[in-house]
Amino acid sequence: MHILVATTGVLPPGPVADLCGRFLADGGHVTVMTVIQVPRTFLEQMDVEERRSFLDDRPWESDTAQMMALGYLEERGRRAVEPIVAALRARGQDTDVRFIEGDDPAEAIIASAEELEVDLVVMGATRRLFTDQAWTSVSARVMEQARWPVVLVPGARSDGDD
Image (cartoon, rainbow, N blue to C red):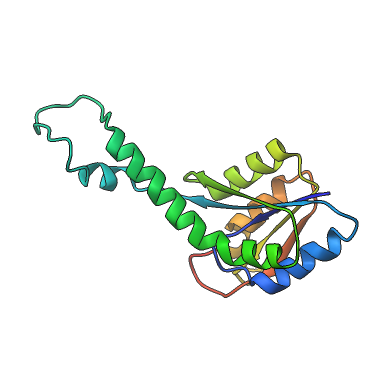
């Protein structure tokens, strides 16, 4: 069995690791992922190694800006997934990590699940169910479009996290 755990950093690590352990009692694999929106425009402006005229409208092609974007993706990604990865590895679970750059988390989760051919997706539910707002959440969108089971684990409630 292959489980995809999609998190923004609000999933409780212990319960998620315990849940995965129950599903994988006979062996299997877990991939923990997060989707990060990288502020490329901001990072490009921070690129102090390349000075350009304001009149120069050529596309930005700086290796430094790209490296900054990759560093941002990895730093934010690690911060979101590390507690769950540590809890899984402490229980001896084989675990991979994925950091996906994207603007639409639901789309990225679905694409990753399809690419990895997972059997189950575990993700957080931070909005109250059965409200109009809940049905536009990332979790609800993944449930609507998924071709595999989706398990929602309650996380810390907030207005912006899904």
